[in-house]
Length: 182
View 1 (spheres, rainbow, N blue to C red):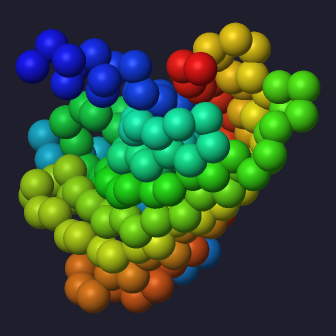
View 2: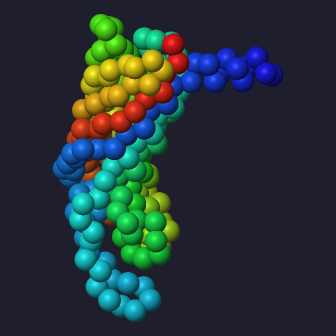
View 3: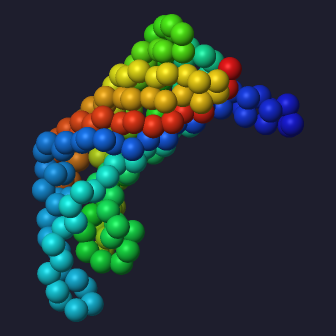
């Protein structure tokens, strides 16, 4: 058992990032930015502006190819996790990431994989699931076991029902840190 744990930890790759820019096209955009009415006092709450997208990727592999699990939250503001009206969108997925080549610590990467997006109605607790594909490319600069990276991604998600029924495209530019053992 210790050998298995050691093997998993030794091959573990972890990436965490923040979107510097993002754009949503499709029915999900208006759903995430609509005003809401407070359940407790009936006051109109205008949507928060300046929401951020965060991503966390963890997986295993070698120096060139990794298989990762992905969690990304979209348009998060200071009120996203408090009681009240509105929606929270989260992507759960998997991807294969390939570091195409290496040159003095610099390597271009490409990644693609399937995903599912959950749209949570914070008022009712209703969850709507959509099928998605997420792909992108970027560059990273490795300094020992730590790497700085920048990625450009596209996520296409299709909801069959619910508030965001239809197809939505999310585009973004993510910057972050990656932990990658040698």
